[in-house]
Length: 430
Image (cartoon, rainbow, N blue to C red; front, top):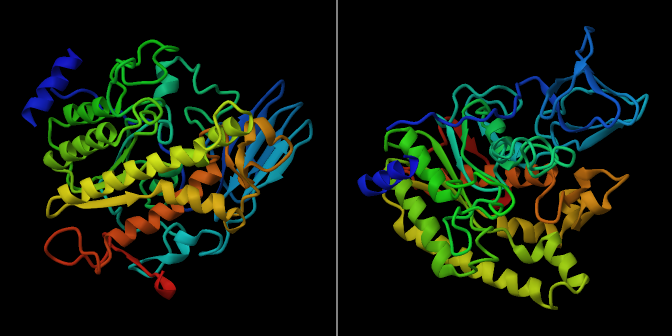
């Protein structure tokens, strides 16, 4: 029945329940977030500031200044401090940590230092007066999934003992930080699923690379995600929403061909645009040659020498073709925002100290015991730590605002003076 509706939607470019997984709970008072919990034989608990009872902690729990986190026996918790202040590990039989006050406005996070709201306060330090979009709709794979795959697999994957619930990382992923900074954490519709390809392919009829391991993944590819959303809204996309389209990395090692990946993503962009979407963010392929999997593969002899450079070159060709194609098909009145994950990954790999990183080559899960995960780029062999996601979100926020700056004027015939009340300051011509 669902397949028939998808076919009808493709031909007509019927309402099914909207998917709205819980978003990162943050408020203007949030000073930290619990990003990782490993209870072991013990417990991780939180006591509110000013007193009260201890209560069980959960992943992504927002904390205020003065809240106390404690662990018992061999339990471990990781607390991510706001304002780019890094993480604190609480562990052991007598582990205890009192959350300090939030950092002063503008400290730690480059994006927040660049973004000034029209009422004269900094984004993220005070609740913004009006959300810049009606909602944020996400289509993607493991870089965006916040719970669909873990629900589809009955809690089996991503393995909860190694990952923050529903995420292939140790905490929030990049669009959760972005939505929080935009004051829109409670306005996210997330259709992303771990393992999603852009569309079904030979050998992968479900369009998901995990379909040989887990049943029930039919219809989780990006094409199906977009069709599900359009079915949910009766074929008319909300023109006031921000749409995030991220995918292609799971296609890459299986169909590493610009003639396949680019048309699939372009088709999805065109479907959203034709259905009424006016604000579309497209993330390009991260550089696979800079991932821990490829680096380790070459070092261990699993991949031939030069594999990383080859993968990087092919991904760059795909990204160039994708960018040119999408720019050429963007209609008047539509803003396309290019989230450049490829360049970001290369910049961090080349200048790790500039991003507060000490390790940008190996996965924390294998080699990081006893160190701070906030100083590592990769959590596993492919996916960033939550700190890596946060830094990327910094870059994306600046890109988002640049896309609406007066000099770009991409959102229609009249120049855009700001993003719905948010203006941008870019010092030194950066």
